[in-house]
Amino acid sequence: MPHHVDTYWSFRSPYSYLATPRMVALAAEYKVEFTIKPVYPIAVRIDGFFKRANPLWAPYLMRDTARVAQINGLPYRWPRPDPVLMDIKTGEVPSEQPHIYRLTQLGQVAAEMGRGLAFVSEVSTLIWSGHTDDWHLGDHLAKATARAGLDLARMDAIVVAEGARLHEAIENNQKALQQAGHWGVPTFVHQGEPFFGQDRLDALMWRMQSTGLKHRDNPPVTPEFLCGTWRLDRWELWRDGAFSRLPLGERGTGVLIYERQGRMAGFLQHTDWHKAPAGQKPASTDFFAYSGQWRLEGKDVVHAIDHASIGAWTGQEVRRAARRTAADGLELIAPPETNAKGQVNSNILHWRRA
Image (cartoon, rainbow, N blue to C red; front, side):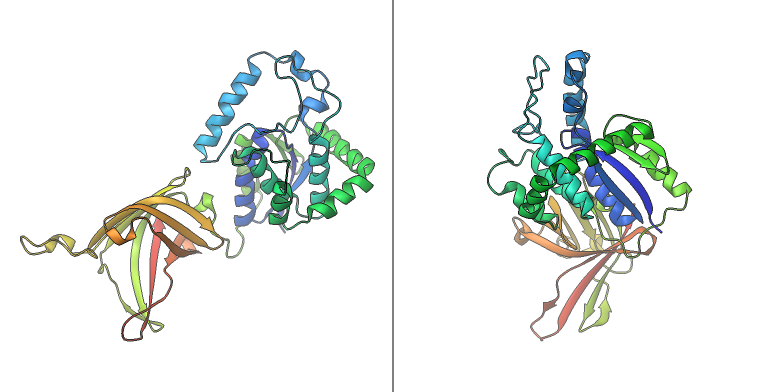
């Protein structure tokens, strides 16, 4: 049975946004379910909160959230518009709010439909990533909702028809958060124990692993899994479905580095690359290096190469199917290619975490 985590979450909380990619990755890798419990942000939940807050609170929050985003390689900017209409200088929050009640109630609808995590992931990225101004206009929100597997028009109809019930459900979430032992977001509650803040996910994982948390069968490759340094075990060339040879030799080496900020670099070297005759350069296939941007698209990792020792690669996108293997390994599989003899060649690179 999967572990369950009640997750108290707000659309106006930068820390909720910053925690969400990690939650998505953990839910993909482990048998854990994050049940989203939307709450209204503290600005509308606690009257006068920002009027009484220490004047250093907001500037520090701005600095810290930008720092956390940078550490984790996440795009981040304060939303335009802010989900909560307020006077930043005075802390005054009008009772009439054009965005936050709708957003939070949509989050509650998504949670009731079993798509809470997917919805808050897509919508918070829309709002907080800085890639979209006027996220509330046009079809931005509808497209984000569709990426979560939901229909915005249908959800908005539920909000209009059942607004009072949804408001009560959200207030019940807020009461449950208090009863669990905290008031802020994100707060993760597992078996009655609260873990407050995006920086407490490691503590939550430690607790769940102590109570038998298991990996999922055949977990996908996620950004969190991919980031770091990998060393080459071997490069295999398969021809017409049968193993053919090791292009880099028995002791060929390689290093592959993925950074959270989206940069990557790779180096591959033949066993005997240094043994070229005097005055003769090693073949391009004996040693090559490349770097660029990386991204995941479904089950593929895409390298957008901007520097390469093989000139033809510069400016190209190299796509590899990515697959996790036993013992925390990684396979990168190139698309099959047919040579002049009509033979189908497949290249598989096996990596282990450094």
